[in-house]
Structure formats: structure tokens, C-alpha cells
Amino acid sequence: MKYEDLQLLTIWSSPTKSDLCQFISDNLSNEHAITQLFFIDATNSFPLSQFQQLVPPTLPENVKIYENIRINTCLDLEELSAITVKILQMLSMNKISAQKGTKDAEVDSLKIILYINGLEVMCRNSQFKSSPQRSHELIRDILLKLRVMGNDETASIRTLLEFPKEQLLDYYFMKNNKTNMPSMRNKRRRVKNGDSLAEYVWKYYADSIV
Amino acid sequence: MSFGIPLSQLIVDSPKPLSSGITGLDEILNLGFQARSIYEIFGPPGIGKTNFGLQLVSKLLEAMQQSEANDDRILWIEAFQDMPINILRERFPEFDIVKENLKRVRITKFGQLLYFFQNLFKLSQSMKYKLIIIDGFSQLVCDHLCTLSKRSGGTLDKTIHELKCRHLILIFTAMTKYTHSTGSTIILLNDCMNTAFQSNEFESLEEDYEVLEDGSNFYVNSNSERRKNNVHILKSALVANIAMGGKDSTWEVFLRDRIGLFRDWNEQVDETIFVKSKRVKTPSSRDNAGCTIREMRINKRNYETFRIAIVFNLHGEDGKRDGGRLKRTRNSVYRHRIVKFDFDKATGEFRDIIDQNINAGLISTLSTNNSSCLQVFVNMDSDNNLIPNAEGKEEIIYDSES
Image (cartoon, rainbow over all chains, first blue to last red):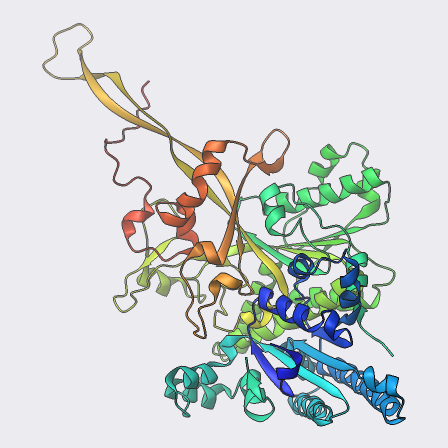
């Protein structure tokens, strides 16, 4: 999975640690030295030891990769919103420098991968802190902002959202049975409990599921 | 403009993992218990969870003594059981280091614990604990859920699982905030419970389930014909309590690892068949003692008991995946990693098992057939598997008149 192949907003369902490490390594290698990865997480899940095995930090050519990965801990949607705004400001500043027309700025146009894990935890914590309505507003606001900025040709940002497979039952049912109708069992569950957050994001915001 | 911590800095800032003293376990945990993480340790009563916690405290104190850097502090939160401080007094004759670096606090309510961690986070710049151990965390949660259930008069019963998940997310969020801001490690020492425990109505459970005659207090069989999958397993009391359900993964994401401590035995270590004499009184005997001599064949087996630690695969390692399907593999080797160890009575510490015979046979024993350990987490096909060596070649007679 290369940066160029990613769509604006992609759901990655239960990636293995090795797949995740490989993805990061492929996209932040020396050919892509200008790509930054923001790993936003609610649960300290960055696979550090596996990544260190795959990309030894002691090698001089890998130093830049380790500098370009930034870890953020984020436990509710207010924090996520603040981080998103900062990233978008960074992209805007980069865009302004690019518009000034200097050749260097054009070459150094920033590519950002935003990897978010634990969105459901953040959402639940926001519900506790404020209200379900506020939490819903924040989710919509964050995802829309990310899509809008991703659509801008001069500001490159691609978002990956990690969700467990168990929260995408409808998607896998439809994929495995090659149908457009969700199963009756899931329908009953949905009537009772509503969509899971992963299903909501998949239906209304995400471009694809990996 | 930059924000977040660069990965390079995170590696430099990360302290050395805390060793458990058990080599195999340390290897699985990537050199030990990591900083900025929450671990759960659970097991049946008497398996040594508190001792394990004390061992971690001792290891950290020893490391402090060796490095002469006494800045690190340890917090022991006791819920219902006093911390056995005397053991530390024996291990550290110069008790000053324990007094200075180990703090204890008693918390008996879930709400108190939540409030405590929220305040601890606010004071995280001045109150940095490298290691926090909560002994009896699951009991606090279970008591909290029972209280809520009773108070609601049964109206919460259908949503109690959802409530449990929400409250656990709340407290784990507070804990995670603290661990991330201070780089500390939190260890939860929990009980384990049979998954048949689903309500407070023990009478109805007795009607539905029967205890198997294998001497186990936990492993029960369902009488109900409808349930074909009638094996119940030992799980953490955070999972198996009055609020069981399918959404435990929502709070389990906060746990770095879940470690179950159980007992196991090594089968057929020493099988000796010998002939033994025994006096039996018969009415037809004419000798003075009124006894005759009979020969008995005795098949004596020695079982070497030891402990095992199962590191559960909470976050879906590579072996669990099956294409795009949601099918779970039943192969325990892929799902969990198993380490065996033992308790050294002389030193009062857990240690590796050095005996090569046991080491060679263990994994195959655990993953293939008759083992008590497998009763813990794998759905067995036959009840015969419950009793070790049920198909023994010789009748086993344990004779007390030697």
C-alpha cells in the first residue's frame, strides 16, 4: 500500500503489526523523505519493537524515518480536533510557501499520513465529558476537515483509520456474500443498538476499506 | 511547527523494561514489563498473584539499590487484602529503601479509585510513580457492578455489560493519561472466574450446571441439552462477572497484555510398577496373627507440579487472521503464548524451571492432549480429557500402609 494509492480517507480493519510496520517503512523510506506520519492513538499501540526490528534505528539512513514519525496520545475528540487543526495549519503554511512560487518550496511539498487508532474510545470519552450530540458534531467536523484538506491538490494529506474487524460486520457480510443487503441478523442488531462507529464512518466518510 | 513526540525521542526516553524474574515471560513481553503500559495479571486463589507483584517491587528496588538512583517510586494500591510488607522486610534488611520508595494506599470503592487516578494525573509532575500495582482491581469492579445492579432493582440487568464497558473505559482512560504523562507501568492483579458465573442467583446455576467429579471447583458441565458448547472456562474476573457480554474489546484495547497464572503438572514423570505386600485379615486364617499375605501390583506415578503463565493474544497477532473472514482459530498455539515457571520456597520468588525433561515436553502437552491447563481455555471434545491418565494401563492404587 503506497501513499499514492491511498484515497482521502481509508479504513484499515485490524491490520497486523507486521503489515503496519511494513506500510510505514515503505512510505517513509529515503525516496519519500518528505512524508511525515502522525500516529494518533488512544492506547499506546505503536508496534515499537517490531518496527525497530524491521527498521534498525542505529543505521544512519533510518534516522530520518524515526524523526518523521510522530506519536500523539489522544484520549478524546476535543484533543483529536486540536491535533487535526494543528496539522491542517501546518499544511496551510506549507501551501502558502508553495504559492509564493519558489522552486524549493514546490519540491519540498509536504505529504502527511494521518493514522488514527482508537476513535471509538475517543468518542466514548467525549460522550462522558460532554454529550453524545457534541461527540457526534466533533466526529463530523474532524472527518469533514480531513476530507476537505485531502481534496486540495497542493496540500497532501491521507487519513487511515484503524478499526477492529468485529465492528464492520455488515461490510464483511456483504463482501463475502457479494450482496448489497446487510444480513437480517445485523439488521436486527442495528435496530437495537444502532450502527457501530466503524460502520458509520465506512458508510458516510470513508472512500475504501483495506 | 511541530507537535507530538518523534519516535526517536520516544525510544530514548523509554526506560528499561521491568524484568519479572522469569526469563521466558520476559522474552514474550519484549524484555519485561514496558513503560507507559497497563498489564493485567489474573489467576485462581493461591496461585501467587500478590507474590508476583511483590517480586516486581523487589526487582525494581534491587535495581534502585544497584544504580544508587533512588528517584523512582512505587505505589501499591490494596483493595481488600493487606500488602504483605513483611516479605519485603525479609528481603531488604535495610528497610529504609522500602520506606522511602514504596507508598501504600487502601482503596475499597471503584469511585474512589477513579477519583484517585484523576487527581494523580493532575499531580503527575510532582507525583511520579514508576510502578503502580493494584491488588484486587477486579474485586472493586465486581463490587461496583453488583451495587449498581442492586440499587437499580434489576432494571439495569440488560444494560449492565454496556455500563461495565463504559466505566472501565473511563478508569482506563484516567490510568492511560497518567502512564503516558509519567512513563509508568500499571499492573492489575485480578481474580479469575468461571464463565458460568453470570448472575447473582446461585440456586438457578446449580440447577443448570453440575460440578464434574474431577476435584476441580471451577470446571463445570451444563445439563442443558440445548447447549452443545457446554464447556466453561476460567477467565479474568473483569470479563466473567455479572456483566458478561460481547463488547469487552472496547476496554481491552487499553491493556498491553493479559497474563493468566495457572497450575499444571507434568505427566508420567516417573512411572514405577512394583510389587507390594499387604496383610489382609480373613476368617479362614489359622496363624497366630490371623492374617494372610497377598501381593498387590501398584502403579505409582509422580506428577511434577509447576505453574504456567499464559500471555493472551488480546490484540490479534498474525496467526489469528484468516483472510477476510471473522473466523477465529481454535489453535491455542497461535492465540496464546505459554511459559512455565515455579515458586522457589527457599527464596520465596518465582523462578524458571531448569529441568530439561519438563521443558521439552511442555508445549506439546499443553497444545495437544490431556492437560489441566487446556481445561482452562480450550473447548475440549470429550469429558475423558478432564481426568489425567484416565486410560492408564494398570489400576492405580494409592496404598497408605507402607
